[in-house]
Amino acid sequence: MPIPQDDPNDQDIYQEHVLDHYEDPYNRGPLAGATHAHDGKNPLCGDTIHVDLRLDENGRVAEAWFEGDGCVISQASASMLLEEIEGKTIEEVEKFSAEEMLKLFGPQLTPNRQKCCLLSWKVLKGALQRPVGTEADPSNTEEDEPESQTSFGGPSLGEEQ
Image 1 (cartoon, one colour):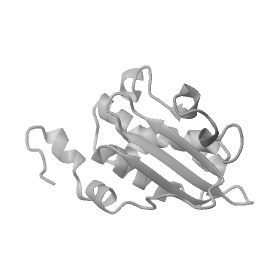
Image 2: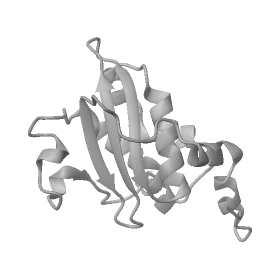
Image 3: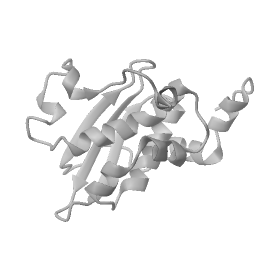
């Protein structure tokens, strides 16, 4: 993959650790035995993420897997996030902030690119609230229902400050 040379920020996005997560993602694929799941889409660019979680009896994330399609930022950040949260308690995951997600990713991003980075974070937060096999499970709703997917609206993190 050629690295764009036009904008120094573009080059920063393609740091080695970002490309490593994009090219060899952590826990990419479906998770058999998932207890929680959620889907999300960034309508601005079309990036999609699906997160499967298996929570254990002690309230910890035993396994976290994702599937998706999109840019380097959305897919690499999903890999980074799921690696980061595995083994943490639900409370620790719920406290993990957008600012911490952007710091975990690394390179500074424009507001629109922040939305790509934060997509997996928003989907993860939604997955914690959606046990598989219940009415809150997105697989039990019509695909075109807006409640079944996390979507972006309003200002980005950078625009809110």
